[in-house]
Image (tube, rainbow, N blue to C red; front, top):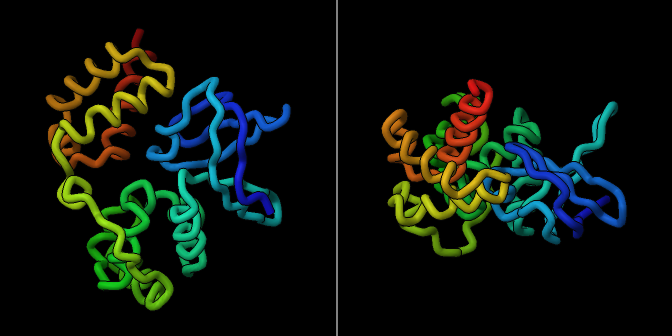
Length: 207
């Protein structure tokens, strides 16, 4: 079982990264938050969970061991596959997932794409007693969406880390604020990053 990888970041995309570990290119699936910490050409360490299926072995990477541990508990729930587990951690921090599970906050899980009220109810039922809050502080910006002064530098850093120029990243965020003010108002770094990447990719194709 591979529990971590350390190597040079070879490539970073919207959902994956490739780390060159002793000459082997290891493909890792990760959340936008984790991917934003990886920069092409630099050395990095990611904590990993390997999901083995009959026809595949897939690595999922995380910035912290806490993220990985919560992910592994999540995918033990009936109906939560690795992709959904990753999507939950793209929307919520590990501590927010623990709090939502402990307080039976189904609304927190319905914020994740693909999870409806019935699915959320099943999730909190099955997570009962498996995830307990650690007492780690949850930033008010994270809980309430956050202001632009909090999320904007993070999104710009993530976009430049993916190869875009800071000028293009800043211009895209300004355009996104006008085109989709609702998603910007949430202050959710992962969601804004995904929307910005979609916008930049569409602009590239149009050229």
